[in-house]
Length: 461
Image (cartoon, helix red, strand yellow):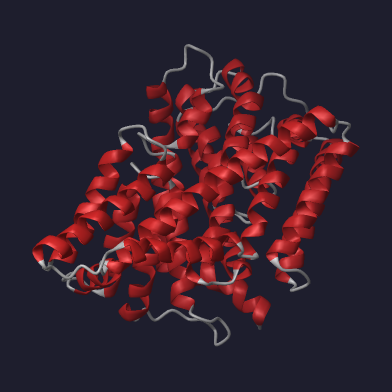
């Protein structure tokens, strides 16, 4: 190993260590990059080494930051964030919860199934994890506790359903992944749709199994009503506006009518109209949504800036070559190497947020996937099918980062709306089965890549 290799390793160690100090992640990323640029420059100056780091290295980051900020694709981020926040205020979720609970009232665990289905619908219309988890917690947790649901099942269902928004399109994570790897956003949206539905189906199957094995954990509603055609009609009327919005956004992308950026504008306008139709839109609500949208967007983009500088210094030291050499030297088959990569990303999710992993780790690892030679069927129409499949695998793996302590954001979002008697350890216990279900879904997608590649192939074909 050369000096640059040691500097790369120590950069990662320093970065992860400083995360526990509580400093903002963006400053940690940029600060570590500047620090190791100084170390490399002083080493070259005083000891005659050849790290190649100096002030010109940092000056190159200015052009890269400008290129990032002028990227047309990333305009979709604030639009999708605004769309999710406005839908959160539109009151549609409350109506869906009330009507769907009546429909599934005769099913054991019907309320938990309702929460999961609404989580899927919110995921396809908002993509904002914090908004989904908080909304589902406020709407369903009191009702689930009142009906006698097991606390672990209640908390796990809410957290698991709320995190589906990071995978099911339109997802801001997929937009960032597409930008980092120069992949079509539409391709990732199409590829992620079936895996997202798969996870939701696994959640529902688990709830039904719990109701069968341990009925006390998933009781039947005491005030259930007989099934009537009116119930189905009411659920249809409640879901229809959101379904139209989802179709307008995703359908226009899949049909090639609009770009994801243009579709995000349609989604933002549609969510505003829905809030107005439901008489939830006023100046105060609009002001609060805009402020939340600005702060969330600024949080993401300031991490973009720090990660850009960090990645530039890391690559100047040869970090991408070091990782590629390390992966090629792993004494496993191609699928063994894939499992090692996903295992590392899963473990990083315990300590890093998905944004840092997406901006720093994914661009370093993804180029090595092409050299591994995965034989996945692109049906002759998908460009780089192995890379598309791999990115979706990473996206599913990163979804676990919202549920794994100590930095699982969904855990803290949910804790903020729980009664005081609900402890954080109760939430930890509740999400364990859902983490396992996500990993089962990951294995299924590894075994059957067609779950990712089939829909894009149909659209292109």
